[in-house]
Length: 109
Image 1 (cartoon, rainbow, N blue to C red):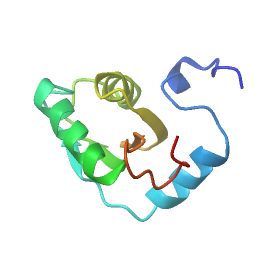
Image 2 (image 1 turned 135 degrees about the vertical axis):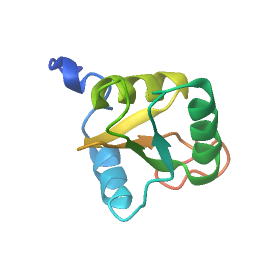
Image 3 (image 1 turned 180 degrees about the vertical axis):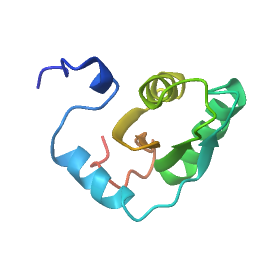
Image 4 (image 1 turned 90 degrees about the vertical axis):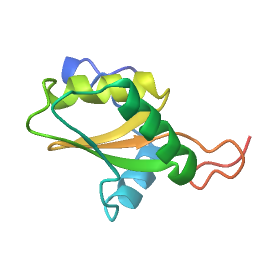
């Protein structure tokens, strides 16, 4: 699947069955992490990595006072935590990183 041509969508993972499954599972989640007025900082990325290690799929809320727009914040979150963005909906970003031992959404391997 080719990469998205829209610059605002470049941080999203490619469409497919996995992304569809992640978006469905993420619908019922509450945001675990919030990006505030400082933007995406090292402590935010560290907290995101911890949350991804525990939950594998995490919803992050981008506050209105954040200096970055939602697409910039999503790109920094995905690259800083070496994760994938499954969805950007409003000011909420759904971030996924496969669990190394017990993956819930992908077969192990």
